[in-house]
Image (tube, rainbow, N blue to C red):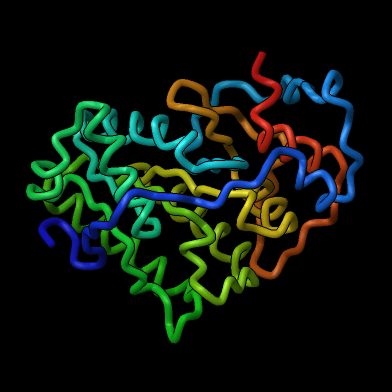
Length: 258
């Protein structure tokens, strides 16, 4: 495909993601679920508008609730001369195409000229297993190619459940996020969002992902500094912290934005 040797565009039918109701993760985190009139707790005030380019999106429920915001970011990045890379399952790629078109993006034109890559290919897997080296090499090559092709940078977003492959082995997650953060620091032309769909992930994975990102994506106009960010190291496991778990649950329930 034009503009990328590592990823290919894909087409599929309309997405029909599985959706779980709010509150399931309170039990998974070991926290009591508060009565409805007490559950709206404001995210800590330290979480202010951020400049980091490595963001996480943690959410619960139908992914379609957030596709509009992600599509709006893609639209903005395209106007800023960034190549945009969206990685997810075939149904979600098809859904993103629709939301991009609704946002005003000429999807076919952008794909043909190489500015937009929508892919469900999983060439970064080795025998079905997530390979950190291969994934980082793929991103590095994609950024290098984008710059050679005259783009200001590369913006990428991927679903973590999909990226880790069918075996769902999350043992290398912290190493991957650590290397991503280092890569973003070394390359100011790189930016993106790691998507954590709570309905498809163990709570411990949400905890690790949340603490590995310096900023949290809420929507296209609101990105918050993560006060619980810890510069991760390969092999590190995070000790459960009720404040961290409560913040994750508020993000899952879309609370704390009043």
